[in-house]
Image (cartoon, rainbow, N blue to C red):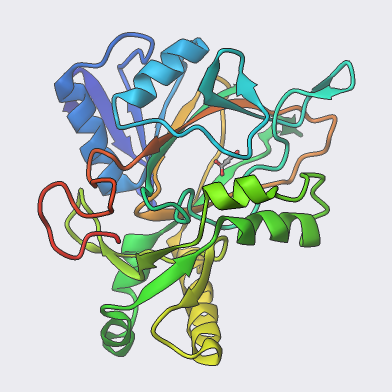
Amino acid sequence: MKVNTMDIRPTQQTLGARIYGVDLAQPLSDAQTQTIIQTLGQYGVVSFADQKLSAQHLRDFSARFGELEINVANAYQEPGMPEVMILSNMVEDGKPLGIADAGQDWHTDMSYSRMIAFANVLYGIKIPHRDGKPLGNTAFCNMHAAYDALSDEWKHKLAGKTATHDFSKFWDMMRREKGSTRPPLTDAQKAAKPPVSQPVVMQHPITGKPVLYVNPGYAMRINELPQETSDEWLDFLFKHQLQTQFQYQHLWQEGDVLMWDNMGTVHNAVADYKPHEHRFIKRCQVMATKFFHADGTRRDGHVGAHA
Ligand code: SIN
């Protein structure tokens, strides 16, 4: 499909489209920006091949889609450009070049934040390979499809429910269960990201359709239920949403820009490479400021919003 110079090729899987015919180092037109937003809503994950970007190009491209986050816990930022974060297992002169274990389990970025995230934009500069195959895939699950596949009984039970999401859940799990060397969160970091409440089912602001908006990384508790029932429901929902029929994996090529819709997907950075198999990626996080006010209500006046 050709739109605004862009050739959009869906993967024909549950998520994903590859876009050709656009140089992301050049300023995007409004029409191109809108096309990418619609494509993200429809396919959840988009990738652009053979890009040659400076950190500033990456930042400028990402900023077309909303305000950029500066991560409170991140020591690894592009010098002079805190919106650009470095994800890497590389070490130079004994110093890590980036955060080595970002996102290495299922989660949704920024679901713990009052202003949720719209999109992640990753630029793959060095991708590890073994036996000719790329390693360090980014895996996704489709939350439109996961909601659709719930029984009517579950859809009814979940209507109007909210869940508490907490930043420290994923961080503490990485330290406790995955041997992460990340330091404990400081009180100041925790205070900067207090737990927030989100709807369990959100009307997606691009597609207008319902999505399941809980994730194992950050969702702690369904607020309207006793603890034990909440644990049972979340356990069911986490298993449900991660079923293979909803899964898609992006296999990286150097020069790829990978962008995904955090409102309609959950994701996992697959940690199947060793310290000597080098991965170096630059990332921007785009907040959902195009769709929501600071208090979480929808800019287009839709009631129900995400808060
Ligand atoms: C992330 O969760 O943003 C990291 C994804 C990746 O490194 O593949």
